[in-house]
Image 1 (cartoon, rainbow, N blue to C red):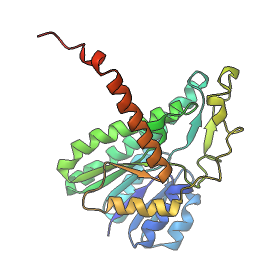
Image 2 (tube, one colour; image 1 turned 90 degrees about the horizontal axis):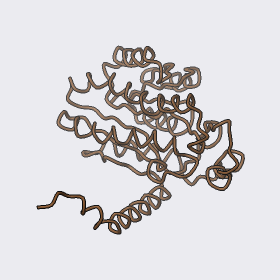
Image 3 (spheres, helix red, strand yellow; image 1 turned 90 degrees about the vertical axis):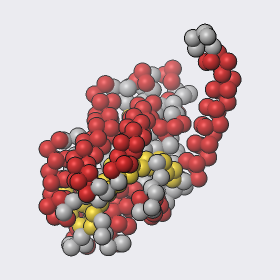
Image 4 (tube, rainbow, N blue to C red; image 1 turned 60 degrees about the vertical axis):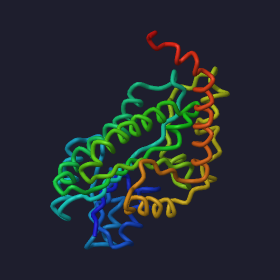
Length: 276
């Protein structure tokens, strides 16, 4: 039986994953900034669930959550960095404090959790780290530049970590969902206070007051949770797991366009080598 530590379990994909893990008979440390939002999961599974408050930007809470997980269950076998929220703004509109908070949550918070659990995983020569990204890191839509940049940074770190940790028996998987029927595009979505009129037809179309996608997303969080479990428990967990046909199709389009662009400029790119 494995022990999972999952961040951001109050709603959405994190909660669906926590429910699925516990239903399998696994142990789970379920966390949220307000632990009362996940206490029902612990109450329903008193022997296998531990509900803890966790703000991933608070180093003391990160260290405390991992310590309590180790005390209760002996160690963390699977870390799922799921905590996060959306942020929309044209790059020029972005508020510096908002952007720093976004990166603190999605990038530095995830790294802090990984660094806290890795000593135990290295000692056991086993474990899995799952970092939740987004198709946005690949398509980079206007109005989501900062969010896409944060997720792209997390993906780059994850790719390096995978190579560093594979010889030690630890897998690292990036999970990149498309649109799922959660609160991500509703309650969990933030945006810049400033809206510059010149961006109305680009970034402005994605502002909350103009976006009609919430509630119509095609993805099923319960199925996403099962897919993550299947990937993590497979003999060779994937480096990148896309979730949803919309994500698959979007990534294929990005890859095709990027390859075409590289080929179009191949001669100029190759011309910069030293002669001889």
